[in-house]
Length: 590
Ligand SMILES: *[C@@H]1O[C@H](CO)[C@@H](O)[C@H](O)[C@H]1NC(C)=O
Ligand SMILES: *[C@@H]1O[C@H](CO)[C@@H](O)[C@H](O)[C@H]1NC(C)=O
Ligand SMILES: *[C@@H]1O[C@H](CO)[C@@H](O)[C@H](O)[C@H]1NC(C)=O
Ligand SMILES: *[C@@H]1O[C@H](CO)[C@@H](O)[C@H](O)[C@H]1NC(C)=O
Ligand SMILES: *[C@@H]1O[C@H](CO)[C@@H](O)[C@H](O)[C@H]1NC(C)=O
Ligand SMILES: *[C@@H]1O[C@H](CO)[C@@H](O)[C@H](O)[C@H]1NC(C)=O
Image (cartoon, rainbow, N blue to C red; front, side, top):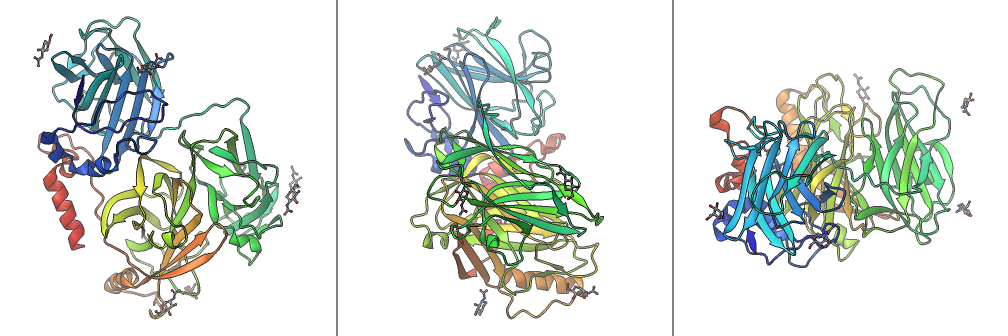
C-alpha cells in the first residue's frame, strides 16, 4: 500500500534498502511544487545510481533496521528526510537536546488500512509526546512494502516554532522509536539515538589500515615576505594502480602563516621533482588541475561514499604540485615549515571519479583588471559557458556537483556561484554572504546539483576596498585579489579550469581617484565587456574563447525566520507559485 505525495527518487545504491512503489504524483499538490521542479525533472525512473536530492545516509540503530536519508537546500531553507524502518507499525523520528525524550522535537507517522497518519509533536518528558500547535513538518510520502515503512517529510531548516529544535551546522542528537503496530504506545527497547551533523555531514569512513599519501614540504624556510607561494613538485610513482582518495586532511605546522594549500596534477611533460618559489616560469607552473584543496579555517573533508578522487595508476602522470600560500604580514625571517596535506585513500575503487573544476576570475595575459579603492561593494564576475567545455570533452556528461570551496583574498566580502540554463538562472552552486578570508573550507552543498552541457556558471565576488588608497589588482599576492570557486563534482572530465577575464584590451586604464559614479560606471564596463574564457585540460592545453556573457544574478533569497505572526511565512515566498513568478520576472528584467 502506498501513499505518495511527492516524487521521491528511488534508492538504487543498495546502501539503504528501500523499496519504492510506482511513482504517482498527486495533481493537487503538483502546482505547489514549482520550486522543486528541478528535482522532479532530475528524477527519471531507473536512471542514475544515487538520490540526488538526498545524498546523505546513516543507520540510526546498530542493527541497520532504521535508516535515515536526507538532503537540504540552503536556498529554499528546507531540509528533507526519508526514514525507512523495518516495521509495519508506527515510526517516529526526532531531534533531541540530549538524546532523551524530554524537550525533543518529534514526528510520528505510519500507514493504516484506511490511510496514513503523520504529526509533529514535542515531548515534555518520557511520556506520550504532545501535538505541536504549529505543524512544522510536511509529509511528502508514506509507503509500506516488504515489511518496511518509508516516510518522507520536509521542514524549514529554521522554523518559527519554539516547540521545534533548530537545525544548525553543529552536531545534533537524532532519536528514533517505532512500534510493531499502528497503535502508538510505549516503544520499549525499539528506540535509540545517534549524533549527526545534518548540515555539515561527514560519513566518517573508518577503514582498517587506512593508507595515506603524504604531500608535505620538508622544513622549508619561509622568506620575510608578506606573501610567499612555495611549490613542491612531487613524484608519487609508488602508486602504480589507481586508488581513490576519500579524505583530505591538513597537516599544519604553523597555523599563523599557512593560508591555503592546493595539490595539482601535472601534465605528462613534467618529469622532474623540485622545491622552490612558485610562478617563476618553471615547468611545474603548468600543473593546474586541482586534486585537493584546503583553506585557512578549514578542517578535514570527507568525500561522499560513492565517489573518490582518482590518484596514481600507470596511465596518468605521477607528478603533482603542492602549492602552499604563506601569509607572513609581520615579515618574520627564519620561520621554517613542514605543512601539507594527507590524502587518505582506498584501493577498493568507488563508483565515481571526482573532478574539481576551477571557475571564476584570474588575472591573465597582460590585460588589466583593477579594483578601485574606496568602493564599498565592488562586484567582479567570472563566467564559464560549458558549451566551450564540450569542444574539448565531447560528449560532456552531466556533472554532479556536491561541494564547493570559495576563494578570494583580503577584500572579499561575498561570493556567489550562479547556475544558469538557457540564459536563466536556475540555482546557486555556492553561496557565502559573509565571506571570511580566515575561514575557507570545502562546503557540502546539501544536495547534488547537476550541471548539464550548455549550462553556464558565473562566480560573483563582492569586495570592499574602503580601507585602501590604491587600486587592487587581480593577481596572486594576498593583497591582490582573485575570485575563484573550486567545484567538486563527478564523473571527472579532463578539464581543470574554466575561468574568464573581461577583455579590457581597449578599456582605458583606471585612475585610482574615482568618484562613486565613476566606480559604478567602471564596474558596469567590466561586467558588460565581452569576457574572454580560458579553458585548460588536464594536460595543460589551453584554449581561449571570446564573447562570454555575464548574466544578471538573482537576489539571494532571505530565509531567516522572524517570530512575529505576520511573517510566519518564513521562506514561503519562494515556495509559493506567486513568489516563483516574481523571481522569474526579477531574473527576466535583469
Ligand atoms: C483510520 O482508522 C483509525 C483507527 O482504526 C481511526 O482512528 C482513524 O480516524 C481512521 N482514519 C480515517 C481517515 O478514517
Ligand atoms: C529491512 O527491510 C528491507 C526491505 O524489505 C530488507 O531489504 C532488509 O534486508 C531489511 N533489513 C534487515 C536488517 O533485516
Ligand atoms: C630545519 O631547518 C633549520 C634551518 O635550516 C634547521 O636549523 C633545523 O635543524 C631543521 N629542522 C629539522 C627538524 O630538520
Ligand atoms: C619517479 O620515481 C620513481 C621511483 O622513485 C622512478 O622510478 C621514476 O623514474 C621517477 N620518474 C621520473 C620521471 O623521474
Ligand atoms: C598604485 O599602484 C600602482 C600599481 O601597483 C603603482 O604603480 C602606483 O605607484 C601606486 N600608487 C600609489 C600612490 O601608491
Ligand atoms: C580581446 O579582444 C580583441 C578584439 O576583439 C581580440 O583581438 C583579442 O584577442 C581579445 N583578447 C583576449 C585575451 O581574448
